[in-house]
Length: 93
Image (cartoon, rainbow, N blue to C red; front, top):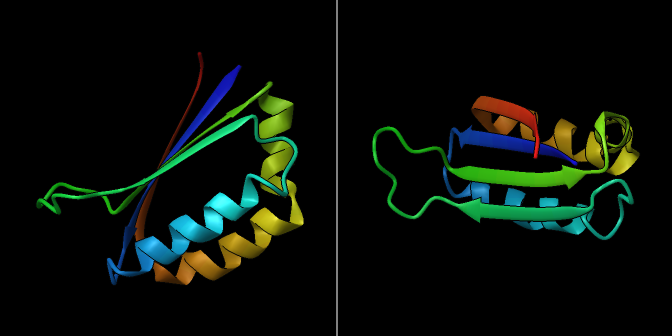
């Protein structure tokens, strides 16, 4: 199983809640997502990120399928202008 972790910082932290809702909608649409966990930061410290996304996929091909899915591409086009930073870690777990 491949684990995909994404952290996002938003110019306006209130956009993180909207992004969380939109990401959670993807779980019902994109078949390559095995599991999804999406969390918002609660403490808002100087080193905090606003949103954490963790998805699991059967393998790297499924991750690529998720990333190429039209619903994911639509989300990316919406969220990209709202972000100040994004970090990604992919690992086998």
